[in-house]
Amino acid sequence: MNMEIKKSPLHHEIYVVFIKDVKSELRTKVAANAILLFALTTLFLISYVIGPYRIASADQPYILSAWLWVIFFFSAMSGLSRVFVKEEETNTSIALQLAARPEAVFLGKFFFNLVLMLGIALVITPLYVILMEFPIRSVYNFGLIIFLGLIGMTTGVTIIGAIVAKASMKGTLFPILSFPIIIPLLLAVIEGTSMTARSASFAQTMQLTSVIIAFTGAMFVLSLLLFEKVWLE
Amino acid sequence: MKILIFLWIVIICYLSFLFSPPAAGFIGESSRIVFFHVPVAWLTVLSFLVAMIQAIRFLKTRDPIYDLKSAVACRQGFLFAILATVTGSVFARVMWQSFWNWDPRETSITVLLFIYAAYLVLRASIEDPQRRAVLSSVYATFSFVPALFLIFIVPRVYYSLHPDTLINVQGKIQMYGRILFTFLFSLGGFTALYFWMYTLECRIEKLLYRKEGYYD
Image (cartoon, each protein chain N blue to C red):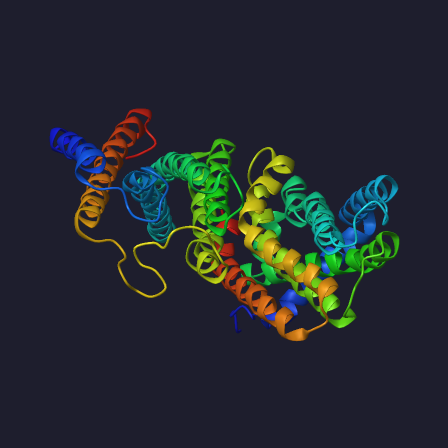
């Protein structure tokens, strides 16, 4: 009798972890609702108090793109650590450690966070652009920058979520640890977003895009290498 | 050892205020701050590298002594980062009439400060020593990505008012004679001071660990 344990291929494990998280999220919808409500509340405040007409049109690109990313950053902070925190709270992390490889867990949860963030952005961004009358010159550049920025932010923040889940004061610690890590990314992304409102040329956006991609790539590789240490601790 | 370093620092003070002439192109005597600001900024980066290397060694060997060294480097790096920020800000006020203006270099040092602070908060919030060691080492290693961008890429890509560093884009040294001599003398002195501080605090931490029974 062959007692060798058969390992399923990595992509299948990633898929299973991803689907598991989607199913458990659909039961309670805690993370999605937290992020969405946070984003909507902030958007409501900004739109009600300031609206599109209280800012000089020359300042609009800068102020409006900074606010958009403030909304994204803090909404992400209110929900993206949930994937790891819930495993610790319900004591299911040990079962998951046995069931799947660390890389599969990381990638599965990363894709879950990414889908969550992109879904929220799909609701918030059009609303923001309409309510604040964000003067976009090139829709493609704008969409590209937002898309890449969200990927980068999720990459940097996912492993921090895993660290935070093992520590005390989880809620406060998450933004404190995440902020310094993704600041360079946020600066480049905000600059890029404001650029799409100032000129339609792709060449200028391209330069910032390469910075964002390089930064995201570096964080992604390092996350994959380091995640095992955090997860198996 | 400590007497030697003390004398070295005294000589640095003498050289920088009395021996070296003020540099051309700077307001009044303001250029003298370079003999203190640059070494301290260099030590900020150096402690960051030490902290990261020790963190990686810990993750490889799981020997608590490396984690302890990494923590010492971070604590001292935090101190140097504050000193570099304050001296830089004073210089900015004299030179450009503003304490703070988000120059690329000012941004970089602020983020480094945040990273150090976040690391220290993370350490404080975990009770179990083994878990604390693993998680803070991972954080120290991971924060290498933003540090790399901020220290080496951002100041070279974006336009900055900051005077050229010793290793500048053109790869030329723009200091001469007495100023260069004083500067290098001070850089060496501060580095020696750093290694003395670092080994001393590592020894103290090691003794405390032995006493509390966490370490062998």
